[in-house]
Image 1 (cartoon, rainbow, N blue to C red):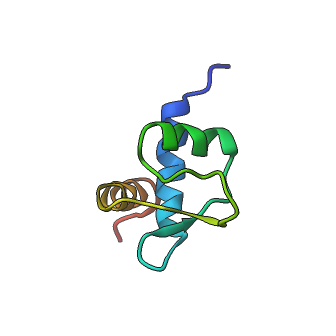
Image 2 (image 1 turned 60 degrees about the vertical axis):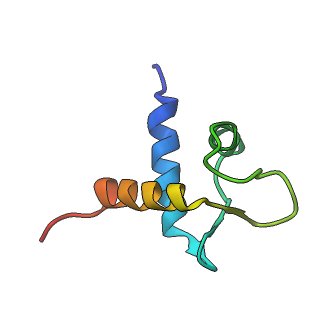
Length: 76
């Protein structure tokens, strides 16, 4: 089985939007490899550290919200 890491990264970005608090911080309770890839892509602040959350830029906030809506909402 081949894993699509890009798709996993998108799902985690969407879920980061779900866990937003304080405007642009999101809980970092996801797989460290995924968070590392997102950081390497410049999408989140460095996840390594004592903080329990990461900071998202304005651009990533918009992208993560759009991904969340695409992946997890339905039109009623």
